[in-house]
Length: 390
Image (cartoon, rainbow, N blue to C red; front, side, top):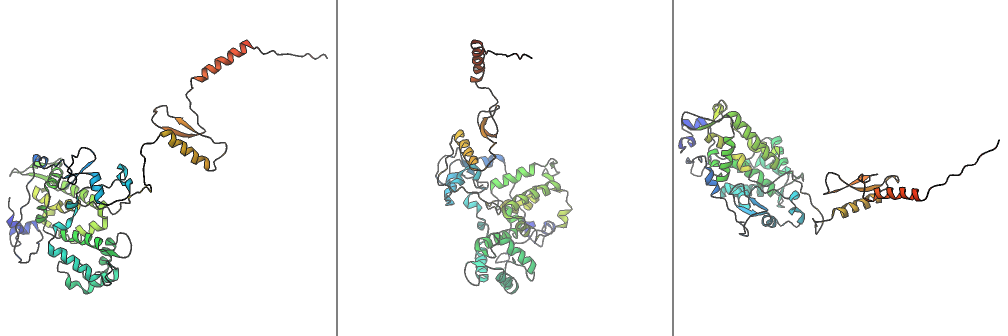
């Protein structure tokens, strides 16, 4: 279904949806078509089972890109990050990759003019040309250099809000912002400012499939008179909230609030709706789905093991023996003794217990009692008594 009327600002449908315009150099209206709801087999046919890096079969220890559905070995993806710590290959310490390198790059959603614009702004703010911008220079640009802001990304004469934006970019609290942090924040702002229908055309087939599954989970799913599947407004709000929470874990709460809510346009007609169609549902959640492509996690503190070699196969008894040796080095109460005691329920792991012993009798204990009884029979004990004469 073509939605030419939706994009044109002078049409009734355009007023109905209240969709923001994306400016072009020629100021001509651009027509976009919202993707239709995909079918299951369309996604299955596009699944690749060969590693995109080594072209080997991906049977075990492989990852699927959540955007393009390309498959790759974790080892191959790990080597691209040039990480020297071998411990990051352990399952418990692995970095979670949601997207491949190509799909994670959100700059492909921007035009060349927009990318060059961000580069020129950063160079303009970086007065001493050291690759970092400080708060003083950033506030000065937002006050005096606002004429250079042709995409209206920066706030004029709002020092408090500009300080918030600087602190969001300065996630490491170093009192300066590097290019990668500046780029991440304003790329997301540029994407969020784009036409919603245009953004729906940027979704991959797998992302459309994810959106469809979210759409179909509404317990109150119905079919209208035009034989279109419709959901409730409450279900849309719930799905939007869950996607936003996921993105906040990656980027930070203040980051997502600044991206999604600062320049949000309230559509009064949309707010009064009780049912939602597929087209409107996709327009509302597309930005959250796109932001979820990133593998970046602001609060992720990667644990490292400072060892050149990690031996994952060790004997359990030796492990506990070393623990006992360490405990003996500490000044425990002399009356306390540490013993290795087996668990009666399982034989897989030995346990360390203070003042403990194995409650189960060994095979030697009953025979020792029998031998003691035989010794008493063979060698009776003679008891002598003395009488005292009064």
